[in-house]
Image 1 (cartoon, helix red, strand yellow):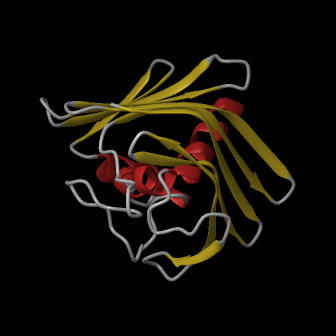
Image 2: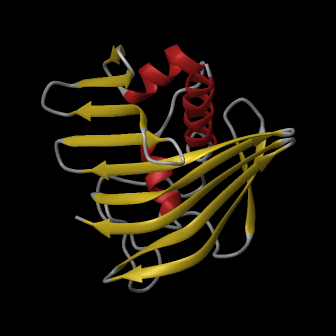
Length: 189
């Protein structure tokens, strides 16, 4: 039961960090962020995610690989046991969520998360925010969801990797919900 709760809140955290209406939408080509920094379309990320709702806190590890033909997001317990994996395969045009022995599939990530959570997840926005697109370093930005909910999003401690950058931490808050994504390792592909 706790694992199911964690997966739902980890996905909620991802939704919180990605399903907003952003004033700087990512594109399929490199977008200049500053004079020298560009958006990496393909990368790998290792980090930690936590979701606090009122007095309840769930946390764990996240590993995200975004390649040309495949995208994988693995959610792990704080001690490293895999809880769930989201796989998007461009060749077969399917998205699969594996949680233990249960498997759920859909045509897109948005369709899958819409059916599970009632909100379509936009991984492009999450990828852009992890790289600081549409956010000012160390400043909170109010972002409005399509349903009118307002979230305060803050990206902290930008790190440079060649012509790219990533935020070491992204924090999103709305009412009694606080989502934190800490990026321990980020590598452009």
